[in-house]
Length: 315
Ligand SMILES: [Zn+2]
Image (cartoon, rainbow, N blue to C red):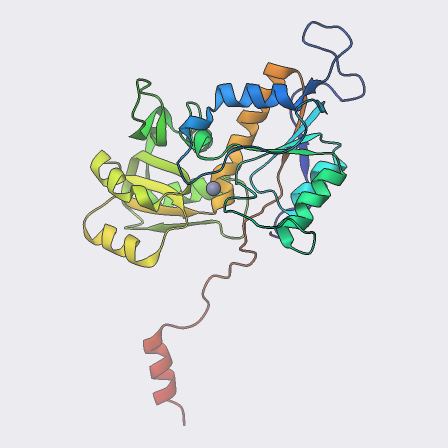
């Protein structure tokens, strides 16, 4: 969480009428939808079968018959975003990252995740996860990221193995005009949700960038796909020293490393708009930066040779 760069409690209301005077799509006084109806809506839009085999998506907590008037959308289900949802009067949280990805033997409130489970149940808030099934959807997580960066003519970086050519992991698109890598990195830092991490770029700062691949979240498994696609640059998150160095040495595209949360946060707005339009519910989207990095300090030390020189000239 970034305590200083991003306001700690910012919840932006999505489209949809306020809870107190909400009316139905037919214009009558309104009925609230149910957890079960939200689950059915989301599973039609993001079928669980599209999720990776290791992933855990779907309903985590909540009675199917429980009423839902307000849905909160978050990248991470953590204590701070849960409290935002409580404050917003949410009945259900749609989270991108699974709270319970691996098997658990206990949800006792003496554990971190157990406390979250108890808090949600006591606050009568259901929890639903849409993860890798949203990554490969069309539109999906990387569409929202690509659109935020100003890319158009979008197509998958790694097409899904089915009949829909729009679906798949990552997206490739075109900038309206070529930019240098340094200019493109500055643009990304300007238009992505603010984080302490910001945006790093690897490659010649003057390199021309026009065709760009993006992948929301940890996209280093797809470096080779970005090379094969012949793009000028590839933006994702969680990139590492050796894969990046070797990729550049092999003549691959320039690389941009953004904050994981910032690459997935744009999708929340798209999902909120779909839920509001499809179910008439009120939606709130969390802007709380849940990236773990909270401080980023550009180097201010002198290069090593200057240090040596300074030492040698010391009296
Ligand atoms: Zn992610």
